[in-house]
Length: 447
Image (cartoon, rainbow, N blue to C red; front, side, top):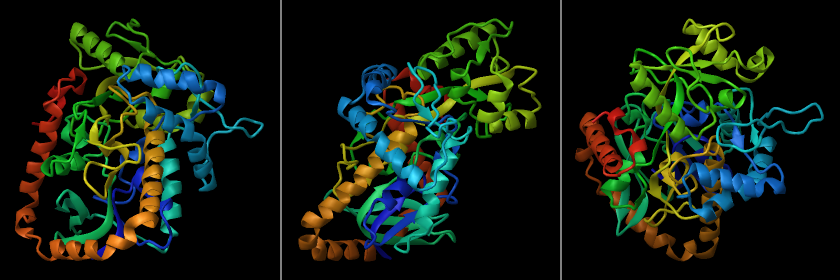
């Protein structure tokens, strides 16, 4: 099979990248599960944006401070300054955000933010954004969407990517040759015992990059979300109790119902404080009190959280809920430049699989959707500009090499799906555990 651009992943970064590519290019999007089982759909709280120029310095400082000043300053600048253009795109695609009575965007606040700058749609902002992007992509005649199709490996020669090896829904193996390949394959939650992520997101980009000696950046920088609904069944995906809940005034209590922490600390620091309190109390969770938030705000802003808690037997209007930290986000990943190019030619990486340095050591709440979209957009722009500038002269040779690699691929090394999954699991967890960052919470990993 041959395409112009292969995108592995159907989250917001992969979809937005496809929308920003030329319509005369054949684009193939593959996804490991169905089109909507990705973490982009799960983002609750919202998405940051530069609401006015006067907020730039504060937005920049909040992002840097949350990241312990290990952030790439240029990446942070790019993300913030591009945010209004991205929001305009999303609105044009039909994404609905909360509005004030005068029609202007409404903004909320989350932990470690010095002001309200987060746009949102109820408590399902990720779903609203990603579903709007998906509807637009599904209308494009140049895009083919393949569900339950797994990225098994990349086709590579002399540090140049020529496409990928894939596993189709029936288990058969095949190749897709491509001028450009984009890994938008998500994070590492499936490697952890407790995670807010979908279980099939197992750090595939990290493993494949390790296998092919593609540069990584901060692979041990794994963020733990401080508040997920406690369950006795760790195999369940942890349900996230949004940062916005605490931004609106929710409080955290120990086993004796005493408040023990500033709830608006950055996520890594708050997670640490909760772990300390759980150890002190000898408990598996702490309590979160949403009764401090006006009932009407709860109903308007957090309907899905209300419903989930109700399903679990808790009435948030009358009682506290049990919460516990869980793996949530991957700040590290495949090292990319400001155009989302990896160290391998013609291989781009976007979204949670990539690391461009925006987040530093710890992600500021609601920067994930924005970062994914901004740098997916830049990847598409870079592919377009590179294509127009120089691709025609080398395309024939590229096609010849790609065809050779595809026809000579040894599928036997991929036939045992379970053995391959275990190998990739080892490569990904090894990359994470070789780091020295204690907030990676390595005791949570399946190893």
